[in-house]
Length: 308
Image (tube, rainbow, N blue to C red; front, top):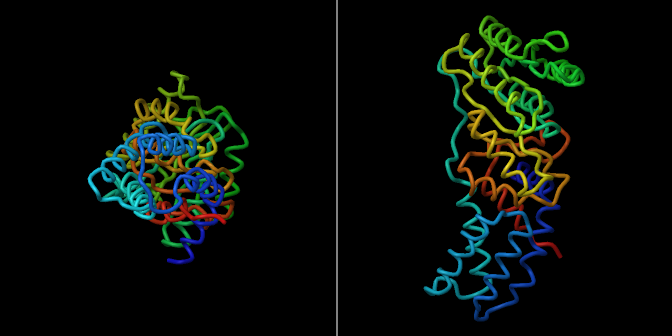
């Protein structure tokens, strides 16, 4: 377990520095707190990408705890702050919805450059190497030639099978074929890659619904999960982007990518407070083993790592 935490700690190092800088100046020992102190804490959390909604809720609860005598020292306040973070990140936490019969189908959606294809490749590696599963990859990003090539490389690297088509083919048709192949080959998982799209491109958003219908024709009840990949470097700005995908694409969970390259790991709080969707995986580095199943306690521990 310690080695897994070290991945979280390393991957969230930049975010931990930002968070500790934001709050360290406020806490200097045992003292009385004024309303202005809580207002400053709220602004500091917002600056650390916790989002307005999460920061407001956390600080409101902390102020109430202080006023009722449950918080007496700075150490109490920091401990309670960390507890609030874990509580928010733990909401609706659950296991992956797995198929009772046939392959479990996971559809990955998100904007251009959010890390869908890379996340699918890393997830395939984990499922094959750590869980000894049989995995099929569905290359439904038929508009970006590099996406199919990238997924093909992951197929070769991991031993996963791949179903693809010619450039410009109908993505829903490829999804149908990939699902049929996964069923015929008795795969444990089918991971479907989709083209990146902006949340305000209504025709492309509608295409995701067509892909979902094609999959369900072959395998009723599929896809079992629809995961939105979120580029963590965008911070709390991803909330509006995520809202449209959740509204139109039937999103059931989140994958937070590129956390190691940004100081904006607080954005996980913004997303959880806003949508109550579980985060399943977090990308904490370039290597396949640095895609980790989301652990709220490890995440909070790493986020509040105090820097010298």
